[in-house]
Length: 108
Image 1 (cartoon, rainbow, N blue to C red):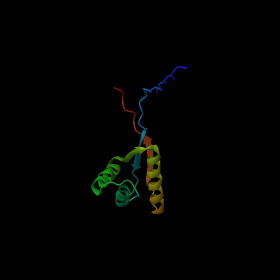
Image 2 (image 1 turned 135 degrees about the vertical axis):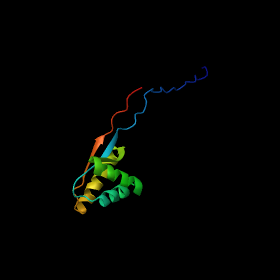
Image 3 (image 1 turned 90 degrees about the horizontal axis):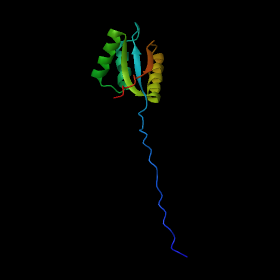
């Protein structure tokens, strides 16, 4: 009997690139009843913005009717949106918060 043959195990490597998850914008909508202080507080507490950044976003909401609170994965955006809506309801503010997908980056 001859010596056992060595066998080589090879793994095939996929050339697939990992795709980044689609990102979502959480949007705050202006209304005539929710106070500016409440919007700033929400941006600081739920979205972890600095006071200056929260104030700037609030002013954008106030002046243009819409402001981006942040951009997150779908699950995180949904969680932050629901937390904001819950807080607004608890404080009797009609603050509208929605989310929309970020535009897809153009391929090079």
